[in-house]
Structures are given as C-alpha cells and as structure tokens.
Amino acid sequence: MKHRTALLVLVLCGFATTTHATTWDLEGVVDQCDPLACDLAGITVGEPIAGYITADDAASGPGSTFGAADITDYGIQAQGVAVGPADSTLVSATLTTDGNGELESGTMALTGQIDGGIFGLIDLAVSIDVGKETWTIETDFLGLGVVASGPGNWFLEADGDGLAAIQDNCTEVANPAQRDTDIDGIGNFCDPDFDQNCSVDFLDVATIKQNFLLSGDLVTDLDGDGITSFPDVGIAKQFFLADPGPSGVPNICDGN
Image (tube, rainbow, N blue to C red; front, side, top):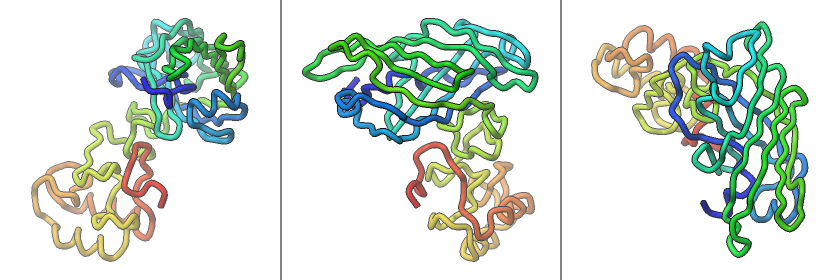
C-alpha cells in the first residue's frame, strides 16, 4: 500500500455485498489532523470522508445489538483513496440499532498499517463512536498519539438496494444490478443523459424517441427490460431539465 493511503487505513472496501444484509452509510469530515500525518496521507482539514458498514440482517435488525462477527463489509474513502478489510483488521464492535433500524450507539475498533516510505510501516488504531458521532485515529509512531479525528454521522443507505453510497452508481434510485450501458459511472436507472453533457434536455428526448420500441441493451433502455418503451420515457421525464444521477462512484459528471 502506498503512503498516500496513509490515514485512511480507517475502514474500507472489501467483501462483496451480502444478501439479507443491512448497510449504513457514513458522512464525516476531517476536523483535526497532525501536519506530518496529513502530509503523508495527502489530505487536508475540512475534507469530507464517506464510508459504510454492512451487517447480517438476522443480527442487526431494529432494536438489536450486534458485534464484529455480524459485520460482513465495511469501508471509508477520501480524495479517491479507499482502504478496506484487506488493509485493516476489525478488532471489536458492539453496535446498537433503534426501532427504525438506524445505528443508535456503540463503538468499533480497527487496526492497520501504512507504508510511510522512509518511515517504514506505521501501526494505526482507529476508534469509531456511533453515539458520539466521532472517529479518531491514533499511533505510537514518533509519539504522535491522535493523528486525525472528526465528526461522522451514520444512517441507513438511502435507496434500499443494499449498496453503500460510495459503491452505488444511482444513490437515490434502487438499482442492485448497477447496469451502466454507456459506462459513464452513472447507472441506467438514473441516467437519461444520452449525449453525456451532464444535463437531461431536448437532445436526450430526441434520442429516446429515435429508439422507441427498439429492443436490445440500449442506453435508452433505462429499466433494463430489454426494450425502450413507455416506462423508460417515464423515467426520463423525471429527470428532464435536471442532472443525471447522483452517483457515488467516479463518473463523467464529477466536478460539473
């Protein structure tokens, strides 16, 4: 692992999404960071952090308490750097959900290492407190202690398709298949932008009209039923004069 993955040996990407599992998304920010650690990681104070936890439904339903053995996947990313179970170890977890299935309280602890170049391998300890809505990274390296921390809010993933926001190419529309015919990083279910100008307009209407009632894996087959038809027109109408997406994965409209 290169040193730019530095502080982000927090939590991240790894196992495939599991059937009969629940996913919670994390939205956070780097509120404090040791200057040396920030330089190694290539991140800055104020930078957003996103992540997720996926756990087995049988153990993590509404009003339950579950542990590390019930967590099937976890992750965090910042500035395009993502680190997961391959780079860290989930040491412990005791998490509680409320009556609506939202994460309510509890803590997680992780350990990992970073390749600090001339500094060698640096051991990190990561603590996440769901109830206090905080995360903290510590290390004994050079006696630094706390090297980064900040707030972090957890909530059930929004569209119910089981995919965390940072894995999902349509974060507000359920699309577990993640079908993306034009390979632009935005799933068909939320992408009636056929000319890829990052806006759904009259040119896109002309394209769907041209393909109407044609079969095949076309960009205009938004619902994936094998034909461009009235349901696809209905989806396109919802986006007319708006942007496609949003998508949580790298996509053609990033930065627009």
